[in-house]
Image (cartoon, rainbow, N blue to C red; front, top):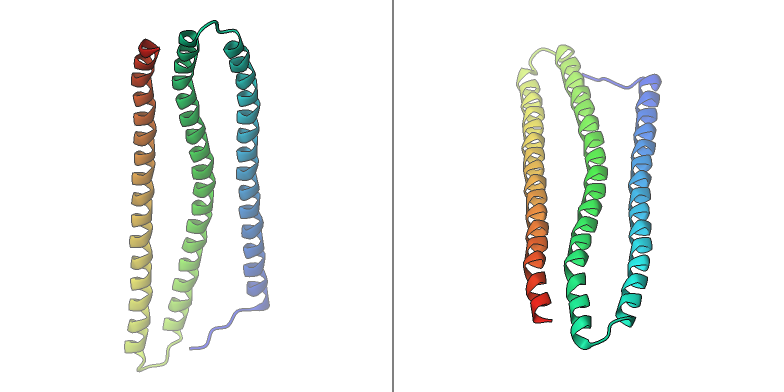
Length: 187
């Protein structure tokens, strides 16, 4: 019941591992690049808006006008923060999805190889080892079922987290929209 890897198989497995590593590294850098680009864009916009707000604040004539200016800034600031959060989440989710896709592909490939190895071992098993072979097959099937269950649970948790994030963001923007007219009237 001995099966061994040939040097060619070992080399192919190592090559595939290196390709996967470099592919994941590239995806990680692409995600970081998007994150840096988003933050630079936000910084430029914030600087420009701060200058506009400063000039507007310096041109107010009384306290009531200043309060109205502040109230008018509340809603856009909340909407921008929510938009930033959505962009940030999209970048992180996209990068995570790429990692998940690669992990799923690697896991499926590994499962195929293990099953092929088990099948080869079963074919070459000596007479009288049927119970041991059945035990190995059962263990492989149980491991595959456990992986599938964990994978489904993780996907469901991610979907719930995404739905909760969207709901919290929408609620925050709605609350800010509702509070802005009240703040303007108070001013």
